[in-house]
Length: 328
Image 1 (tube, rainbow, N blue to C red):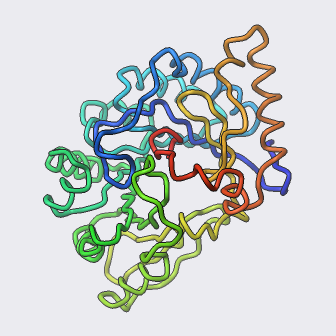
Image 2 (cartoon, rainbow, N blue to C red):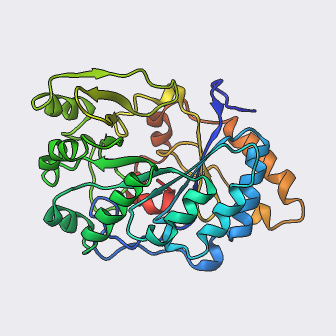
């Protein structure tokens, strides 16, 4: 079992397989994109598999595959096939923009990987294309509906962006009322590749809930697991639920159970903090497996207590990071 220096059990790994993405969302990176890492600096599928196996042996029982966009990586399914064979890993999930997942849906179901988070910040075509800077609306919509109708556990992640998509908050709840889907609204975060600096946001979790309550007054708060990042609600008459994630306000730090490994092997103990170690050179060394264990134990033994404490480590450079490079 992995326990950090604040007595929090760490059992959830967010594993990034690439920093590349086929969309160019304006809250994530500048229009010209970012300098993506060269392939030889990325962890191979074999290395990602080995790191996962080691961490599962240490007590990780949930792995979420992230990016960038995971399905940009052509050999992703090789990793997922390997992970699905690990007896002590009951929960494998994927976060995707749903542009490239279509050809893999049948195999994902066959492997038992049915927890899929779809990043979708608009249900209006024009708004979607303005935010993503790409013409992929129909593909995303079709893949989303297929995932829902074929029985996947789908969560929609909707980042509320001031002046861009507030008008879609209530309509996406209207659209999803007949589906067993969780729509989760996230506060905007500062990881945009330096395209915007901000110290506060208009659409915090309280403002989002207040906005929803003007259209839906009849909803109740649900009891959520202690480690949940979302505050969850059920609207009367809706088949699914909605949640709000205070990703900028960071009210959930006290129960954080997450560890992040980026596509280049950086170990990140807090989304707002600096990398604490790198596993790429470690796993390529002679005593890779044992060294990975030691590095992980050392890093979780020196975690910041909150995201605000972690951010203080690099407050002047935090806005230079892009979400694609730190693994979501």
